[in-house]
Image (cartoon, rainbow, N blue to C red; front, side):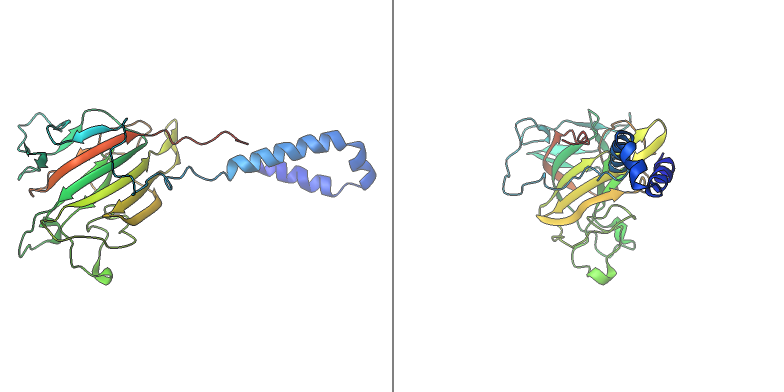
Length: 263
């Protein structure tokens, strides 16, 4: 379509003034079609920016409390017996390899998570130290790890706050193990037409109040994540042999759809 319109535009530019005047109605229709096509092809992606207001700390009225002071709404990922423990408003991850997931599926959302990593002294592998993660749609992992004290030059895309092995955080905002930390997340799911992905998933993340991912376009599933697809999916809280703790977790559904042309 674009090639057809460009060819037509070149043809018009070669015509005389008199010929153009005689064909003014046709020319106007052509220019309108050209403008509409270009605006559709080069439309700005729907952004995840500007949704989080860190001055408003209360849970929105329409948000679902996933981990609250009295109970939690997560369920085991598999049929195996779960080793996660909930007490006094804190959900502690399994020392094994089992994970928890949300009961419902999500596409676009805002999410608040508070977490507390453990410390594994003399860990042979950095990823053995306070490891967990939030697998958005079970496709894209926002890493949780004890990464306090690691300098920017040595910071890897597998450390805390990273989109796992795809992008490290723009700024390092880690606290020490044993101190409560927070993620504030806005996520927009990938868009598909049939089996073809037309728009990447997008994410904005604040770590302890610091912006670490600014409307980043996630290019593919991460690590052990599920294959990308058009539908919403559950969110996984990973069990990774570390007793990472979670509290005050809530999620709010959003509808981050493209606006109609001219709106």
